[in-house]
Image (spheres, one colour):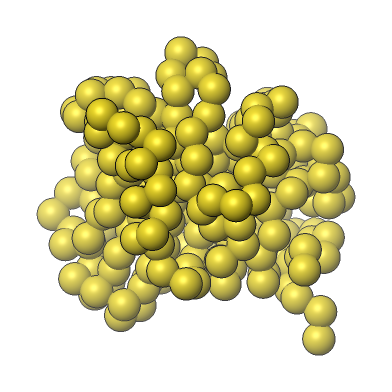
Length: 219
């Protein structure tokens, strides 16, 4: 069942993350400057990182250590934190088999999934008009080239395993897609994400004023 349209609330300041990882926490994270900044801050908190597994929501097909790789920046952000990072195998020779293997490694549920939002309404690597949007029989799939790279991404069925989705959205170029996301507009890829509950944290530029938006499952 799709989460109901979120309720908008006023919000003062940037809050602590909605949910710190707990023992045996399984939390996929998207790439982007905002989640990397979040992890850099969390790395200095009292978190039992040795019990935290961070999966990747999506990844570019690029060499290890490449600055275009989400993994490169995720590891830099975590620093000395002892989280287990389960990297997408984007350098395997057979990418379709690698995607299937990554899908088999996913747990039956995720405690928290971090997602961003693109100016075109994409999230993860679920981008407009890509055939990956219609994949329903796999948890992980490959995209067509997008902005210079083919990508591996969690599909909608995988994202639906989230107990909660945390949307981190910044920048004036996200204002229009954010309004569509909050309205439950399924014509943008982000609007098709389903979860038991969702929380949107947006900065002033994206939300026309600092905002926190909650969506809770029906009683």
